[in-house]
Length: 236
Ligand SMILES: NC(=O)c1ccc[n+]([C@@H]2O[C@H](COP(=O)([O-])OP(=O)(O)OC[C@H]3O[C@@H](n4cnc5c(N)ncnc54)[C@H](O)[C@@H]3O)[C@@H](O)[C@H]2O)c1
Image (cartoon, rainbow, N blue to C red):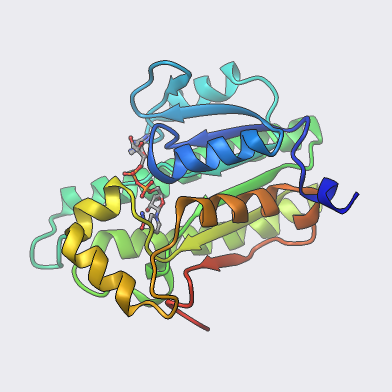
């Protein structure tokens, strides 16, 4: 059956930033597609494993305690609207430490695991349209961090390819989550939606479905790709 190419039945996935927003939606969608999903976030509780992705020891412990892993999705992230005039070394570093160092630490743990176990793993990083074109206003650290995520993924894809590991980025435009609501406010989001070619923002589901594709057999030939899921916000 054609749909089996998109099934994740029997796969084990780990999703960071899974307590809310995109991470939560991606974790739900991977589970719906058949995967066994381990959910992690900075603060744990319920079925969420506590893991601050900035801390190497916490990331190592998460991987030790998570059982087998075939798919890693790094959706933990933070933003800051600060301009270059407002940001400081400390506030810049705060964003970079979660979005870049945190993603790096999770990718490192996953790549080591895949290499040691001879697994053809899948890694999906969450980038952003601003990783291509920079932010429209402020968000200096955030834009820098997403550019770094895009280029790190391409580099990891080259390292992973001979091991049978794919590494891709899903780069959303604007999705309505607590992060984007805080960054743009309701009026800002409405204005962004009406300026989009499709006249709407992305849904969490749009991003989650792209992750299913990249993690499934159907996505086996894709690596080092920035998969733009932005409704035509940026065409390149
Ligand atoms: N919402 C958008 O429009 C949009 C657009 C492009 C990219 N993104 C990216 O998607 C990802 C998810 O964003 P979102 O909109 O769901 O944001 P969100 O703020 O709703 O969720 C982010 C999650 O990451 C977790 N997190 C933050 N710091 C962490 C840490 N140190 N360790 C572990 N978990 C941590 C938070 O607790 C939260 O649950 C981010 O990387 C974001 O940059 C979002």
